[in-house]
Image (cartoon, rainbow, N blue to C red; front, side, top):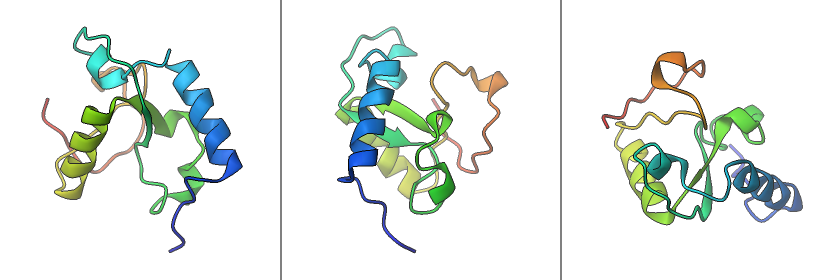
Length: 102
């Protein structure tokens, strides 16, 4: 497995595009009525495991540093499920195998 290059020009462009799409706001905090600036673009399905999804808009979500840290930690212990920007849990079409309790 080749590690994803987070310093590549393609990723830097995509990161800015996703931050702009999400209004530079953390989408997880937004679900709870909080307006927190996003600093990170997170891969819902990890880029190293699913390289074909690495640049797919539906696989990317803007998060604040706190939410990103929490989601990465939860993902590592197998308890996270992240929804794509604007998708309600009942309408989610991505197949994600890990589950998060809100």
